[in-house]
Image (tube, rainbow, N blue to C red):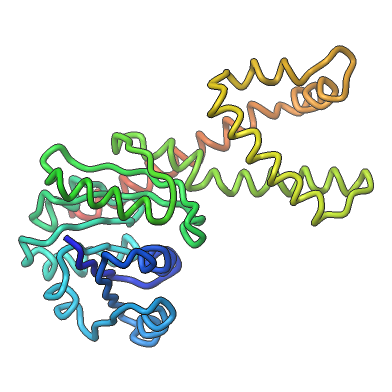
Length: 269
């Protein structure tokens, strides 16, 4: 299971290729309908390139579907002819059930990475069906870990995952930017503020993970009577901070569910 073929060399596909190519146990080939893009990505990462989809499929044991969801239906007929292939999909909104049905193959894994894949720091949701080959699930997990942290989830939980990670990373960017602007207002330059905020976020995450304390408990430990932190928390409460953040996660999750339903309906038609 070491011959990996990528269909699609866009932003996410090329990010994963970049990280996986550092793992020399894999022989990697890429294919894209834009030959110039495929050649550039292959050259940049010292991997192979195939001129046709058939060449890629014939030379692979695992196929990573890194194309946009709307492109997949045009590939199903050809892909479904290869019964011995194993498939990993990163296409948003395309369910395992749809992939299994259209590919006529039970060996399908679905991943939902975020944009930090490009630096090997992705947070990736991972789901597979119970009928999937266990050795392939193990191999697919290893591949996913090449570009970040992996969270095994039931596929039904991909929508809230998108709310807190896939789309949620943008909320973090917005939070960091807003905090930095507040620091600028008080005299700190933007770049210094941003660096401090990034380090603070890392320390907060590590503390929650390692102490296993509830975030509310940690907040109370930082707050002292008539201190600076309680003033900050009051300002956040007055601005309905928790409610706005919750709404953002819920809206992103619900939009994900809507888009997934649309993709499923298209296939049924």
